[in-house]
Image (cartoon, rainbow, N blue to C red; front, side, top):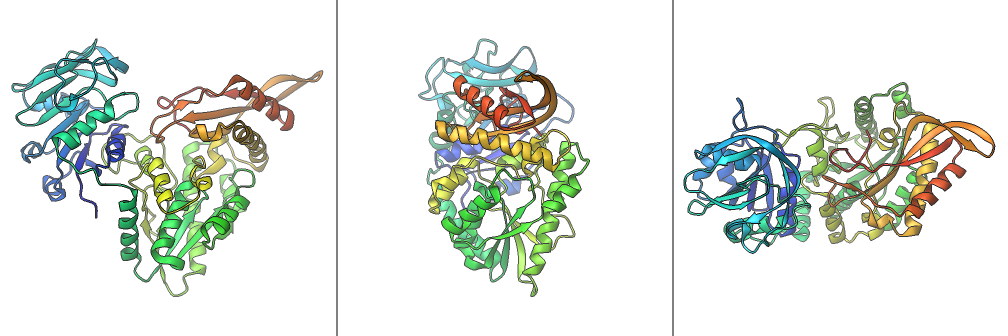
Length: 515
């Protein structure tokens, strides 16, 4: 069990998970709990420092989120970020008001005192703002450390009580010195250890899995992607052949995906893989369904039903007690507010626990990790780069890349276009330069001219993004000649498509997937 060095109280910011990720990059083991965590539970974790995250609420509103005020009496340093800063200012007698000029995006930090969290930080560095409120008056005992063009109090501190507060988000990549600021707080101010890494995580998780599974068997949900492959490998290291990896072909896979997954497990992992052909079941249940949330839920429920049916074949003596899957932090934060009051964006088929009628306990060894950490864990386990650097692929597959109803004809159209796109990215060397790339079938038809004939065919959207963790992303600036080549090939080689468009939306405001 890892000792918690820094504990983050989550007030609902979509960036909260990034605080933990940034600190883990420095080897500081950080965990997240909801803002209403009981004081005795916080004490039991014995953190060396506490961070109050950002959030969507206003501290002066009725029902505003408030932690147990005892956190300030624990004798450990506290850092408030955005809403966390406003709560600190309000709690200690300052004032918070609606800002006349709200700040969303990049701002220049003017440092007044380069002390505390700003120790060694260069003046005029860029920080990321996202706030409609501001601290108008700081509490007694606090001093101003920095300001911006629109905000007088960007950073404040009470050095005697070791309480720090900043209005901007140091955890996002757009804050150029944000990581150093968080490190200043965790390591220099709190004295946190920097010994956490994937080697320690692997050892701890393998030991934990052995203890959980004991002599029983574990059914492992495999998609062929990085996450589930790492989970299967981790389980194999822990309990050997008592892990039963099952790959469900739900008919929503990319071209040649099934064969590639089977070969990958056979040749690279040496782990026996069971493949279940459930294409007719899934496509039958999706017939006539257009709503994206309904599609996701149907796929998730059907996935579990198929797994239970497969488990019964291997569970005559009741040896299988667990189901393992590759849920990650971004899946959790975008799905349900399990850690705090974060807003739900979309549901994930592999998040939220099991239904009451399912007899397995759920094992999610990667639930607290980000994608880059999962890849680092895979390297620690000796997995090949070709497996670890595959782009993320959603559990619901191509169903959420087809706008509207899913049918075999549209799936084949999308597969052919998607294969061309990925081929061109590989051959140009751009596949490993982007976080994720795929095609979306818009089911929007437009007029075109091919030869001397009028066409009225479908539109394919090409999507490629750059990201570090999937929590935020920017569209990839692919060369125009590459985009032209991709467009020409898709239109010429895929009958039924006469127009290709490129998605230049970042996250936020959009999500990476379209549904």
